Length: 361
Ligand code: GDD
Ligand code: MG
Image 1 (cartoon, rainbow, N blue to C red):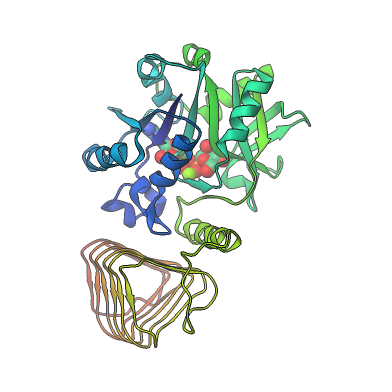
Image 2: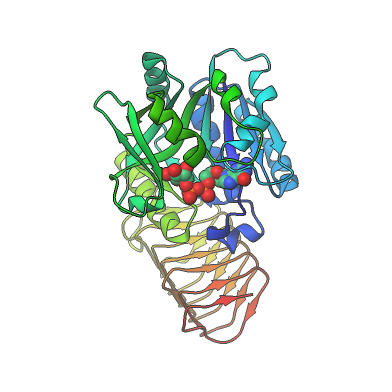
């Protein structure tokens, strides 16, 4: 069985992290988002994964070789000359999808979603109804950010509206599909979107079916959603009785600390915090609702809340970072600085406070 992962756009909304690391390789709970997806696909019996990618192909190529060995799966990269949208790349990958195909269908995934995949249910469902395409749907607080689906009790989709301006329903496209090989012939050879050019037509024809996705789901392509997704995933780990969650008098709620990270016991961590590989958290620090990516140092008495702190950064003593701030890779923040609701781009040296929402380039 084959699968295709859509990796495009520039990850603009997760900027500034994605200025140095492609979105699928940003670690979500200490593991690249792409790895969760590869694991789920391999588990269901996928033997070849095609990555349709339209930026930073060199960085991906290096990683992909490592993942092929680790997960024992063939990974093919197909690059686009220009952004082809979400349907264009599938047409572009047609030959590769059909070459030695063992099944009359293939999986498609958006690259920025995390969930309890359960792809076996989608597969079973797709085989049972026998129509052109199947998708997973979930419930969203703000459906206007997603593709909204209206379907009958058998899962036959009657309406698909991408990012509706007016209320259509609260069930949304989870960005996980199974598509028949035969549909490849119907896709135009130009930039086009599954969500606006293909799904609405399939819905009209009665060829698109949907099933509820169980468990947590999040599109982590935006900082706030990344944090919400982390919270849901850590709770999922807790419910699974995972041994990976941190324990200790200084830990509040669900916290994941990489085994190689060092956290001073006088620092209070949590809830909903992830601390990455080789990070060092000094004394008297307070961190909540945040992810600290690998090799970053948080100096004494710093306070970090609702923020993402990129790789190899140094956060000075008594620094305060909050209000959904995102600090990119290799940033140095001087002692006692206050940062509120701001984005700091890679390789910056911040020496004075940023109290109002700003982007530091
Ligand atoms: N190869 C390639 N080329 N991939 C692309 C391109 C492109 O030109 N443009 C976007 N993608 C990829 C993105 O990397 C992502 O994995 C996927 O296509 C969807 O793009 P997003 O930009 O993340 O879309 P969205 O989050 O606003 O909406 C989509 O996802 C929602 C679920 O998370 C839609 O599919 C919605 O219907 C859906 O509800
Ligand atoms: Mg998205």
